[in-house]
Image (tube, rainbow, N blue to C red):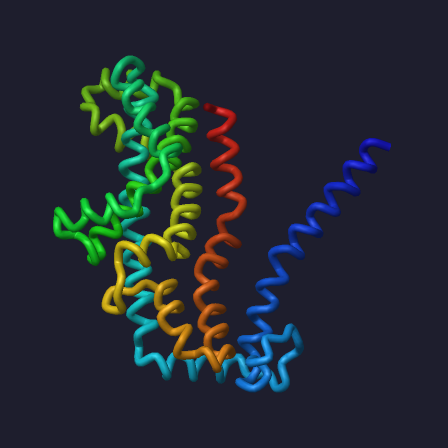
Length: 275
């Protein structure tokens, strides 16, 4: 009886979750496939006629390649930030886990502070202005790295806790220095949790709207998310074009999640068990 009740509750939860996430996507797809007159009604109805491809073509032609530039900026921001997050968080987590004592305590306090203390927008802008990085892509990359480091460090540390110390000792006996021990022995072992970090942070940074809005204002270096905001007024009476662009913006993170969802769960589960 308990097993049957658990199956029913679990199935109901899955159905509810699927509906909760699929209904907004279906609404976006419906409006992106409608013509201008029907889309202005903002109704969840079947397109009459179905003009999704025409809307996509018209939206991009109307934007004078600004969306292409914004996509390139988002790709650069995501790739550089995620690459730096992987290497920095893995190295910090390795030192934190392997070296107990004052150094480990200091690193632990800083990581926990990064998770607990909310981001301060105005002081961060002051710092970026002081070093000449405000309204620049390198400045935004540093902000994304700083915001993502605590979570990534915790994931890597939990996984490294399950890596035997004998691997380090054997490499040291063979004459390896600390950098060689990490990059040649430890780093290759972190592949599963690395995929988890790459996927989660890529989706998070690619879809980030708040940080580019605050730290990279203007249209010159706009990302995809802020570009959608800039064009919202322009397409106020053309929701079909706006939602067609939103649909395209959703495709890259959706594809990444579909292909790597199992590895994401596996990496986080492995870290939680080994930690």
